[in-house]
Image (cartoon, rainbow, N blue to C red; front, side, top):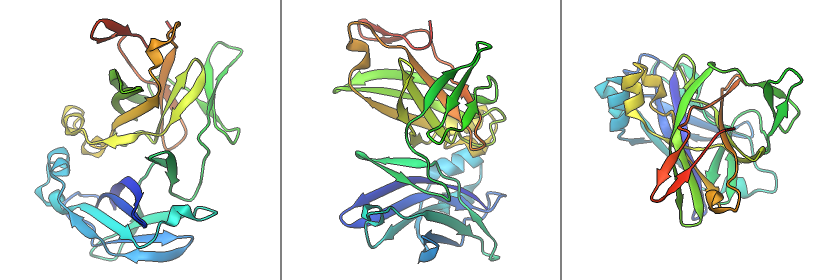
Length: 266
């Protein structure tokens, strides 16, 4: 089975999960969605959501029925100890696979986490003695920065309403799966970890890979970063589900009216 959880939200005393799921041939939508909360089934079934972006990305008309929306009857992430949530797609032939999801989803000022492991938000950059760099996770794991292992680019940088917005796309080097995380460092410190998924059917067509239709990202950073006396150094990295990172491509300058916004080390 293939698929992804695109959105996790808590509103009006309920928890909502949205995404898509189908068989690996991308011809038959999932029959059911099973959601487990701390190992117990909390939901079994789903509301079907029409997804024309999946039809365009996979070139399969039946994928229009592959979107799902599930609403649980309580705000499960407001517990003292947020639960472990795992989401599975079940086929019409009763074969199941766990869906792909990022480790965190932004929900206003909160971070919602799914999956069998829970990682903290903070990361750090490490300068190695040989001149190379690594990313260190909150748990102390060293993530190798290997150019070429991830692909992607920052398409736009904008400052709007006291925020700085960074948008683009990121996938593994073979364009087989979207990046697991997007990490943004401002002057060497992690300013953001995670991203909102943006559907990008143009990528699926250009890269001839329907699986990266969800490789677009959109990140909103607090503050007008480029209006400081000394504009910061902003670097954007993509991290794969297997724990390999690469710095994304970006223009040396982004025009915004009369201002010029610069990213990167130089």
